Amino acid sequence: RESGVAKEQIKEEEKALSEDAEATYRQLDEIRNAAKTFFSNLTRKLYEKPGELNINLNDEGRRLGFSIWSKIPCDDSSGIRKMRVFAFDLTMLNQQQICKRNMNFLVHDSAIFDATDPRQIAIGLKEAKAYCEKNGCQYICMMNSNDLEGDEFNSIISKDELKKATVRELSDDKPENS
Image (cartoon, rainbow, N blue to C red; front, side, top):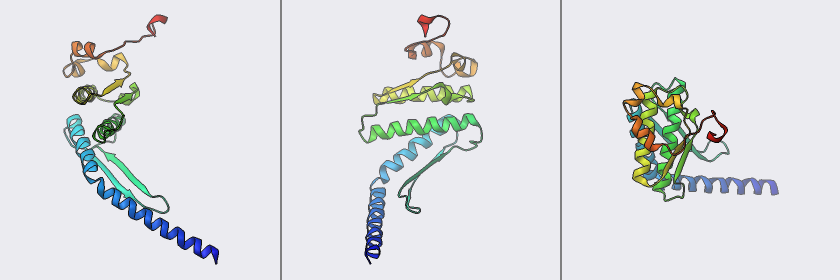
């Protein structure tokens, strides 16, 4: 008998949690739409086609929460998938700014640009810089020097712009440079 009462109580609590999640989901509609728009606009700049960010309520089984996924058209290459992560991360930084959270920076290792077209790297860096300058936050990225060279990259970011944006250059030629 006690087990039947406990099961009924659990069902009622799950129903209340589900209703609360649905109400929160509806309240966050404007913020969700801002994230979708930001992601779409950024990926359009990167690939001339808008990407898609979906944020849905997930109440499958006993797991209640949000289901988030993103897509960029033709994201079948490793480089495009990495730029999808880049765009998602910058979108989350934007959401932190909108929600007045204390997350005022984004950090990426050079791996974020592995196998990525130099044009998309340059556009991504330029967009991150412009966003951070406009919103008073900081983008930190460790880069390999060979990713910052070439006509395609330098047609978007000049060597002078790159030098101005470089805070610290590290190398392994001497111990004091590392």
